[in-house]
Amino acid sequence: AAQPPWWRRAVFYQVYPRSFADSDGDGVGDLRGVTSRLDHLADLGVDCVWLSPIFDSPNEDMGYDVRDYRAVMSEMGTLADLDDLIAGAHERGMRIILDLVVNHTSAEHAWFRAAVADPDGPYGDYYHLQPGVPGEDGSGPPPNNWASFFGGSAWRWLPEAKRWALHLFAPGQMDLNWENPRVRAEVAEIVRWWRARGIDGFRLDVINYISKRPGLPDGNEAIGALMGFPGIEHYFFGPRLHEYLRELRATGFTRTAQDPRPPSTVRSRGADGTLGVPEPPDPVGVLVGETPGVGVEMSRLLSGARRRELDLVFNFDVLDGPGKVRWDDYRYDLGYLKGFYLDYLARLGPDDAIALFLDNHDNPRMLSKVLGTRDRDPVLRSAAAKALATIQLTLPGTPFLFQGQEIAAINQDFAAAAELKDVESVNRLAELRADGVAHEDALARVRPGARDHARVPMRWEPGPTTGFSTGTPWQVGREDSVGFTVAEQGADPGSVLSFHRDLIRLRRAEPALTDGGFRALLPRSREYFGWVRTAPGDGDDWLVEVNLTDRTIKRPRGLPAATGVLGSHGLARGPRMAPYECVVARVLIAG
Ligand SMILES: O=C(CO[C@H]1O[C@H](CO)[C@@H](O)[C@H](O)[C@H]1O)[C@@H](O)[C@H](O)[C@H](O)CO
Image 1 (cartoon, rainbow, N blue to C red):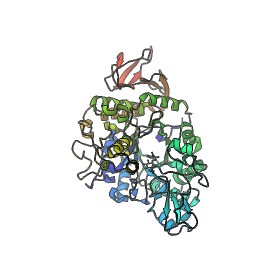
Image 2: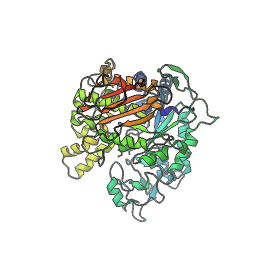
Image 3: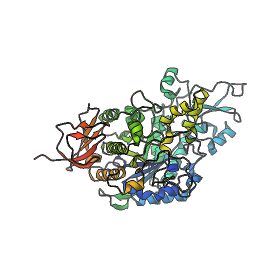
Image 4: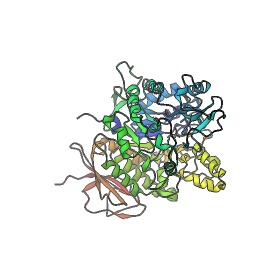
C-alpha cells in the first residue's frame, strides 16, 4: 500500500522563537538559541519544527508584519544562522517549516512603500487602496464598515497617497490584493526560494482571509455584531480562495525537475527512532493552513487530499466552549472537547486529515483554562497535562505541540498592564480605558484571553530568567512553581516531560496509534473519554482512557481486556480513575 504522506504520522512542535532560547543575552530569543536546543526537541521525538515568523520585521505584531521575506529579523540572527538550524534539524531527523504571512505585509515592506509613493504605479494594485471622498482630504468615512481584529476600523488614511488602505490586523499590517496575479507570483517565488534552502513547508497565516469579495461591500451589521468583526463574511472564505490555494500549491510548493537539490534534507527515522540516511526532497512542501472561523466541512474542502489545496488546517472551534470566546474567564469543560473531536472524526472521509492542537502563540494555555486557579496545584497540573497529551498524541490526526506544553506550562499572573506586550492586549486595554473602565477592571477583562500567556520565556531551568537568557527577557513570566522546568523534569521518569517522550516513542513504534482505526467507547459520557485504536495490519490494538474531570470516577465496565503500558497514575487500571487519570493499554488478544 502507498505510504501516507509523512505529515500524517508526524508530531509537529511550534517554536515561538522570541521566547524559546536567547543565545546572545539581549533578552530576545533567536535562531542560534533554537539550534542550541534541537537535542531537546529530538529527544522529545518531534518530527517537524514550525517556527513562528523569523523574517525581517518592525515587530508591530511580533513578526507577523513582514518587511522582507528573504531576510532574517536582526534580533533573531542571520540567514547563515537559519541555514545552520535547517541543517541541524535535518541531521536529527526533524523537518522544519516557516510561517508564511502573506495575507498582509508590513507597511514598511518595499512593495507598500512603492505603492504609497505612486498609488497608480505598478505596486498600487498590490494592496487594497481606495480613494477618499472627492474634495475632502480623507475626513470622509472609510470605504466600508470592516473592523480590524486589533480594534477600530480596518482602514487607514494615507495622506501622502490620498488613499485609504485596508488592514484587517494592525495599522502596520497592510492586506495584499491577491486578485493581482503579480502578487500571487511573488508569493510563489518566496516559497520556492525557501524550499531551495531546505525548508520543508509552511504554516500559512490567516490564509483563508486572502480572497476578498469584489467591491469590498459593507458587512452585515447583525453578522458583525454576532462575530464581533463587521465584514468578516466578505473575506473569511472568499470567492477565489480555493483557486488561489491550488495555484500556490502548484506554483510554489511543488518541486519541478529543474529545482536544485536543497543543501540538506531530513534524515529518515525508524519506528525505534534510529536515524537513517537523508530522504529524497519531498515532491511537495507541506501546507498547514491557519484558518480562523472555518468549521469542519470548510476544513475538509480546504484540505481534502484530492482538492490539492492545503494539507492540514487549524480549526479553532476546539479552543473555546459553546457560547464562549477567548476573553471569557471560565473553566473549559473537557466534555466539550470530547464531543468536538468525536463529531469531527465522525465527519472525516479517508481523504481527510485533522490537525490536533490545544495551545499556540495566540491563546492562553489550555491547561489553565481546564484547571482555572487550581493550575498551581502540582499534582492536578501534571495529571491534566498528561491527559491532554494523551488525547493529542493518540487520537487519529496530526498533533501540533506548542512550546512549554511538554513541561505543563500554564498562564501567568500578569499584575500590571505594562506586563502585557502583545498589540492586541495593549489595544484592548486602551479601548476599555477609553470607555471609562477602571484600570484594574480593564486588566481583569483582558487577562483571561491575553495572547501574552503563551509568549513568556521557555522554562529551561529554575532561576529568575529560567535559563532562557543571561540578559533581561523582553517578556517576563509570572509564575514561580517548582518542578516545572525542562531541567527538573528531564531526569524525572514520572514527569510530564518524560510522559511526553514515552508517549511519542510509543506512538512512533505502534502503527495503530498513527494509522489505526478508531472506535469510541461510551461516546455520551462527559467524564470518561475512552477509545480503541485498531491496528492497520497485524500489530496490536490499543485502548486509551482519560478521566476528563477533577474528580475520581468509576472506570466503566465491559471494556476490552488490556494491559497498561503508559499511565499517569500507574498501570493497574483498577475500578476507579483518579482526577485526570489517563492510561494507554495494549489490548489483549482473546484466547
Ligand atoms: O485570527 C487570528 C490570526 O492569527 C494570526 O494572524 C495574526 C495576524 O498576522 C497574528 O497576530 C497571529 O499571531 C497569527 O497567528 C487570531 O487567532 C489572532 O490571534 C487574533 O487573536 C484575532 O483575534
